[in-house]
Amino acid sequence: RQINSVEMEQRKGRRLVLFPLPLQGHINPMFDLANILHSRGFSITIIHTTFNSPNPSNYPHFTFRIISEDLPENNRCTKDLIAFVSMLNAICGSPFRDCLADLLSDTSEEPIACLISDAILYFTQDVANELKVPRMVLRTGAASSFCVFSSFPLLREKGYLPIQDSQLEEPIVDLPPLRVKDLPVIHTNDPEDLYNVVVGMVEQSIASNGMIWNTFEELEGTSLATLHQKLGVPLFPIGPFHKCFAVTSSTTSSSLLTHDQSCISWLDKQDPKSVIYVSFGSLASISETQFLEIAWGLANSNQPFLWVVRPGLVHGSNWVEPLPNGFLETLGGKGHIVKWAPQQQVLAHPSVGAFWTHNGWNSTLESICEGVPMVCMPCFTDQKVNARYVSEVWGIGLQLEKGLERGEIQRTIKRLMVDKDGEYIRERMLNLKEKSNLCLSESGSSKQALDSLVHHILSLES
Ligand code: UDX
Image: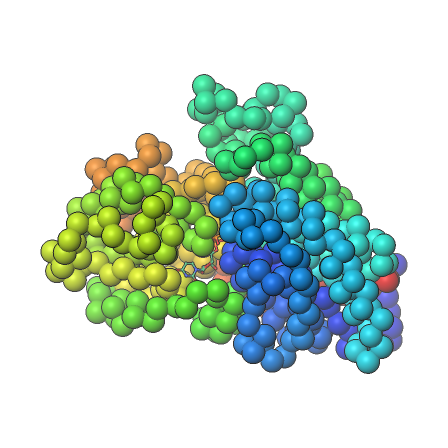
């Protein structure tokens, strides 16, 4: 039903309830979305878990409600991500329901227009149905990888899932240019858990009142069209979220770790586009052997490097202990290692010429927005699909296909940053950067999708 402008006027001053998945790569885009919708006149309430809880004092313009999810101690860590996510979906129902019911009955606040929850928190759809609140979904990953997730039943039926080692190079006919090795899987104690999480996420997204995407039409138009046809719910590609704000104001507030600002003064001393920035996001981990191959590959590339070694990145080490004594000193200032970087600021710095990434969706998008070509090293789930799109569909990066070996690393960095035959990649990247800027302009695709989203939310009937 179309609503008229009088009705629209009456509905201003409505509240949105947002519920993020408590992991860094999901918290950042949810808070960016909250800021975007707040700037469009909505009041914002954030429901959050005790695990990885945000700092409300960074957001005086929002209100916060905590649910005590009571995770068993051994499941608070995120070693087995799928077990963690399954557990959250299993145990949060009752405290979340009580919290939302309480908010709904509070007549001192504006009426609630809808709930917006992370697609992975799929249990929230049943709660929303029960309490008769419209639910919209934020999907923090790419539309392209969601196409693959929505094909899991088909992939299982056709024998691609569970993955067999003997089939890794086989193309997936229904999902070009993906091969079996690009499928978005992750090691978990019970592979059936992964299947159930994916199917739960997709089915409860289909049951929602619409999906909000941190992507843009010019980047993922084809995948968005496929999903539109397949899922049959309204889709709102309004990204890139973080570019709606000044660079320092968004993820700095939602970061769970402290940003080391020494990165910026170190970058200030380097030549334009000379630095390779290396970070594998908030969850991925590597072996000590891989860590050392990376270190020597970087050293031998002869490019200056800024490397984020998150505590816990290297199995069995607290931080950089496996490096040979005096490793950085022998490089004469060519390398800088930190525990956590102000990534968006780093990528926007003129000295940065390439990003060696695990291709988490936020990192991928942040790189695209700054026109920084990528060395791709996906570790698990959607990262594998993102990396294949970066290297083969968009042509804006090179994937390390043969594992981690210092010679291959050195050659890949050179090709991407220096060699003539990497020039086409650098050019394509700059082209795409241009498009990522244009989509947020007044007549741009994301701006228009945001206008439709606001209209859609105001037209939802609770
Ligand atoms: C996780 C999953 O790994 C990924 O597959 C999924 O797409 C999102 O959730 P994560 O490992 O956290 O992602 O990576 P990513 O999506 O790239 O998000 C990391 C965020 O942390 C980015 O916004 C990035 O700017 C920020 N970051 C990263 C920092 O602020 N500092 C750093 O040093 C590294």
